[in-house]
Length: 527
Image 1 (cartoon, rainbow, N blue to C red):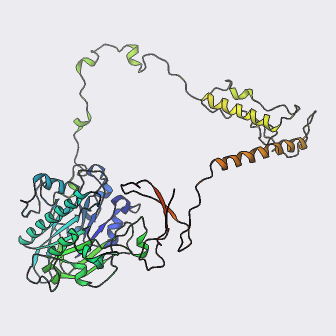
Image 2 (spheres, one colour; image 1 turned 180 degrees about the vertical axis):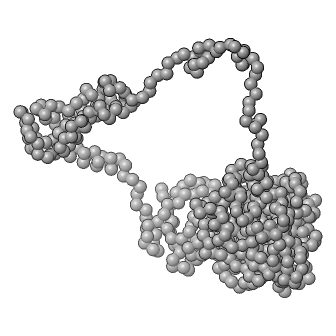
Image 3 (cartoon, helix red, strand yellow; image 1 turned 120 degrees about the vertical axis):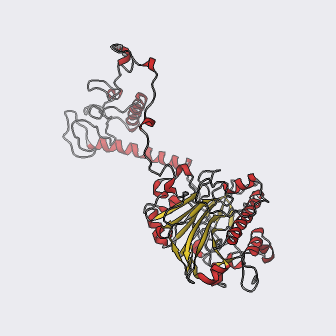
């Protein structure tokens, strides 16, 4: 049995043009747990909700749109026998629930509702056949734990409350019998080996989230007596593998140099991990998000349930495909609004506009005059105009056309032409200016045409130079001192006195200070 967890940072973007089915098949797992789907129920579409060969179970954020959300996709061969949304059970109003909610006396009712209102947990229960030829149950808890925003202290308390509720539910499920796996984005790097820049080790270990993980996770040689603790499956099989990160910052491009953190875990109860776990790996080669997938493989074989639980998205009313009644499409009309039998409607009633005639809004008729027609090209025999007069005629004609509010019909339009390189558009094709022509009775020589063109060229150059002086464009960025390369412009987003200010930094990706490929410490305010 193969389990995969992945924070996709938007389910629509992860599915892409190839579709969700291809994405799920490429992961090759029996149970796939996705976090940060960023989909609310009203925006869930059928291609994402119903995937051939899989059953799906969603939890949506009820507080914000495009935020949080988790989804569990199970292959048909791993169909769960029960499923529910959330950790507290408050949103479970159907049969087929998992149950075993644990001790929640320390939580107020509004706290439990708030913890489950952000769409952060889906629980599925499967029947499995272990390697010891025993049939039992495996409960899979798909979680997206909150992030502790340093600028919002209340979110740190919210995160710890979520951890404690998760622990209460998981331990209650263990006491009820069977096995439990918790997988998802835990949003805490447990050990210094799991962080690219742990800083001071003493303060690192004092982080509240890490202290909770210390009490929740079992480690060989430390907690031999307590079996109600969980195991970090990756560290159990890879205790000393460094730089095994699962999350990177997209803004700094740190994934190029593998400068990140390991915050995505698959946690199994101790008995299951020691007896059934065969492999646990991260999958950094899978792109498409700022996280990478994590997988674990068990010796156990999953036994499919005969029917999907009621939380399955195919049972949602919008996807159930139930037949609608014809009466829903009929509107009741008041009796007094209907004409009596044998009574004819008046002429005004038959006309939707009350007898008014519909005005024609089409193009101008063939014989209709247009203001631009008064500005015609001068006669070939007339005295040639200089560059300024040519431009003045063109400008007046253009303003007249704009004031009229519409473009004249092309078949009747005669655009202003002169000897300044503008051809006259008419029914007769004329040779371009400067080409040999037959002279008329008074004649216009090509020398006069060239003189007119020479008069207009300096004016055009002067206008171009004027615009360049008024709009010089952005200044060239400075070069960093270490690499002598152009810097990139950033904006301060953090609240404070410098919020909104822009600055230049090295354009290379963030990495270790000792890595010559990494970003140097160059910094310069833009103003």
